[in-house]
Image (cartoon, rainbow, N blue to C red):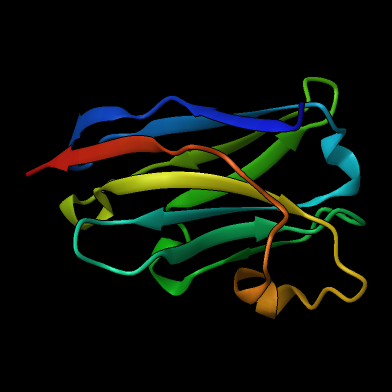
Length: 127
């Protein structure tokens, strides 16, 4: 059974840090592009970051640059999102996603339709 399971969310004060994990099962992540998205209450889903499968290049939405870091551990079949300097506006449900694409343009990576999605993990940042 193909599955992505996020963990690591929680309540943190503004300025704090969290590391989200996304464990894959039923398939091998190293041949997939990976991404993180988030959705705040009453708002549309928003792209956070992505990483290519071929060379590990990364892309970040503007508001996350310098604060968030995406990474993967192929040995553990797991993706991570390190989030630092968190702000109340980062409060959302965070989802990981994985996909394979015949053409992959990094700067467009948050616009692609990913094949697999996790169930999400709640991140709440208090002021």
